[in-house]
Length: 111
Length: 114
Image (cartoon, rainbow over all chains, first blue to last red; front, side):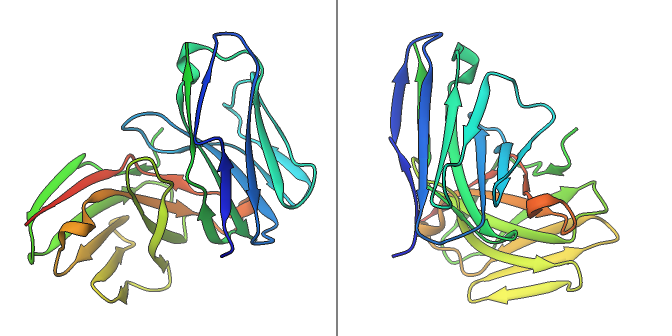
């Protein structure tokens, strides 16, 4: 089945230690998104790639970076995780904004 | 500024009855609305959507109603089933924005009691 896969499902990292979350897709969608969802809050868009064009949300901290080496993969890099970065990170894809499909998410814990 | 709001954090209904989940938005540029369902430890899954040119869309037990003048939409589930118990997110997008990114509400936890 075509899908969006996020690895790992659960990630524990140390305070200040860089961490990378990964997302892959078999849908051949041209847009990939990273959302952050904290408990009982709305998922919040961090940034998205429209094809190769990177679009950062204005309030996304500089601590968060992203890479998209090809159509299928997208990475979320957190350079120096703080306790406030503990959250569920959701990757999603779409074809020009349609057919939005989410991965299962990565639950990040910062210790 | 929360552009999409779901004012009820939780809703509890009896099996077989109707569930009504509400959502309000403030951005008049939004022209496409979606409902997602999310189980614990899983990503949101698409449920139903509606374009701003319509006021109703139905898919089986799920119906979404859009009232543009009130900037309000609702999701009706009839009849409700215990398997419908999940968090429901309302989301909105504006077609002209790059990548049509979604703006989400905070979610409503629906519990359907047998």
